[in-house]
Image (cartoon, rainbow, N blue to C red; front, top):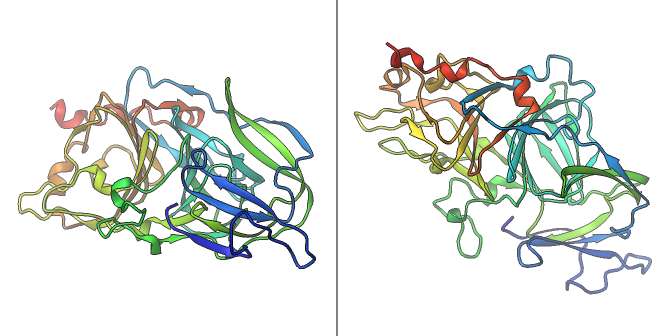
Length: 398
């Protein structure tokens, strides 16, 4: 995160004595990225944040993947993974089903109605897109109010938990990075401010409003981390509740950004996918496709031209509106298309002609482009439409 915030009770000078009303010292924790050379925050705890009283193995959800071989475009029907009512005892952390992954990023889907355990991802930042439902996300930095369309950006090693709200289940598309996630560098000034040319600004980013204090003893936290054998989990037990931070300040903290606050960039002719970019991590980008005015040259073709992902795999999650370019393919709300490098893709047969004369599109989608091949997780294999790869035949075989 690029701009400074301060919440709660902090001393006027960092790394100096900070005491409670009884004269007892608070315990200062520096949470920083890239070996003390990037964004950080200072947190002031009532207890020693290093103190643990137990450690045992946590079996993380299945992380095995299968190569996309033979190479095919794929269509995943995510809503089939969690039939109606099956989510009553599911939480957003332990219930995730892996769709796609490589060494840079893993994409999962979950439908949940149960509050999650306390959780900390020590592999990298998470960005969780909320397809529907609402929640309160409690973190060591404070709480976030979460609603449909929110991206919830959670820095690595942030202890947090999800509490679904209301009667509607919480549907979430989790993008787990092996690095840090940030706005694209081209959107930022050399000092880190979002530029006038960026499609969103700091006013659209919502961090915690107040610190969050909780009591309790022998508190368990699920920690996802890595060994030489791959991704594993540990269940750490803390003698007192980790939510004991009386104040913090800095430029590293969780926040939300709603997709409806993304201002699309349009032009007379079709714009390339980078104009839709919202975030980036090492080896991948995240883009927003939102309702917008389409190309207004008199001879414009408003749907995307056919394109080859020479250096990347393209993953599109369709979560609102109507995608005219995919009509006839079986893709609808809750679908994910996977268009791998080495395969040229674009509108389904008839899509180009149908788009002529359009002035506006009502569509919402989250796109992840990766620069290393993605493999298929167990969730993808469980909900794939096996006919999608042949859905362009139509006109081509006529």
